[in-house]
Amino acid sequence: MYRAGLVVFIFLSAVLPVLAETIPDSRHVLKGRIIRSLAVEADNAQHILAGQKAGKPGSALVFQSTDGGKTWRTLNGNRPLAPRATDVQAVAALSANVLLAGTWKHGLFVSRDGGKHFVRIADFPSSDIRDLQIEGGVIYAATARHGVFASRDKARTWQALGPGKDFLWSLTASRSALFASSLEQAVHTRRDGQWQKVFDLDKAYAIATGPERPQLRAIAGETALYVSTGKGWQKFLDGEKFADVLILNDSHIAAASWSNGIAVTSIGGALQKRLLEGNAIVHLQVAGSYVLAATWGRGLHIIPMMQILR
Image 1 (tube, rainbow, N blue to C red):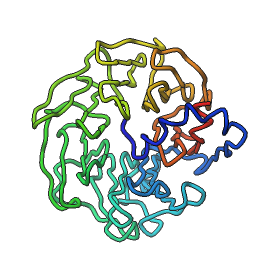
Image 2: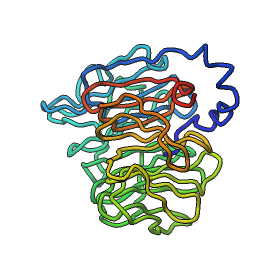
Image 3: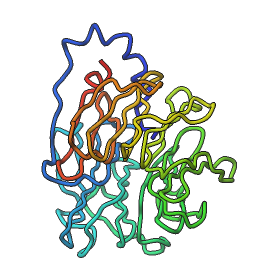
Image 4: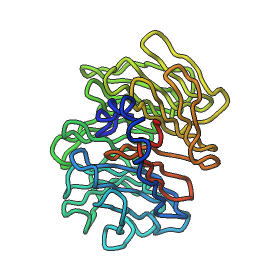
C-alpha cells in the first residue's frame, strides 16, 4: 500500500554503503499484543497509532506514540472504544487532533481532541470497519459488506462509493487511484467514479503501488506474492500466505507473511532476506526512516529502513 513518507527512500540504494556503519537499532514495543491496525499521520512521521485485538470483551484499545514509537500511551482515557469490543481493525490520523478507529461489530469512532475521548459515529452504515486510509485530506473507510465510504469533511458526513457487497479486507489510497482488496472478488480500483477489477487470481489481503511508478504493483495474496510492472501478473513465493505488502523503491518489495516474518524481494521476485522469521506479520507501515511491522501476538517491531534495504 501507499504509505506517507515512502517516496523519501528512493535515494537509499545509492547511499547504503556509506551509511552501513550508522544504522540505528530496531525497537520492539507493545510486546505480547496483537497489533491489528497501524496508522501514521501524513505530515508527522512521529505520530503513530496502533489498534489492538484481544479475546476479552472491552479490550479494544488504541495506542498512540508521538515520538516515533519510543513511548506509548493508551487513548480514550485508558478505556476501550466500546464496553464489549474486542478488535480495533482500523485506525487513522487525519491530524494531531482528529483521529479515527474502526472496530469489528461495534462501529466507527472519532476523536476530535487528540484521542482523549472517542465517540461512535451514530449514522455510519456499518458496524464492521475493515480499514481506514487517508489521501489528500479525504478519509476512506472499507466495510465488510457495505462497500467503501468517503468523507471530505473530517468524518462528519459520508458518501457511499461501492463496489458492491464484497467482503473487503483493506484499502490502498494512492495519488492516482483508490484500490479495494477483497477476500472474495480480489482487487478493484476506482477511477473517475467507476470501479473495475484489476486482479482476480487469488484472494487479496492488500495491494501496493510503486512510489514513483504507479504501474508497478504488488499484491499480498492468499497463496503467493504477485507483482506486475504493467504487463500482467507474475507469481512469486508460491504457497506462502501474505497479509500486507510495501513497494519500498523501484528495486525492493517487503511482504508481510502470516507465518514467517517479512520477505524482502527484488521486483523480479528473488528472495533477498527474511526479517522476524517465524512471526506472523499482519501489517507493514512506513514511518519516516523506519518500517513498522505489526505482529499477531508479539507486539510491534520498528525497523530502520536501511536495515531492510542494505
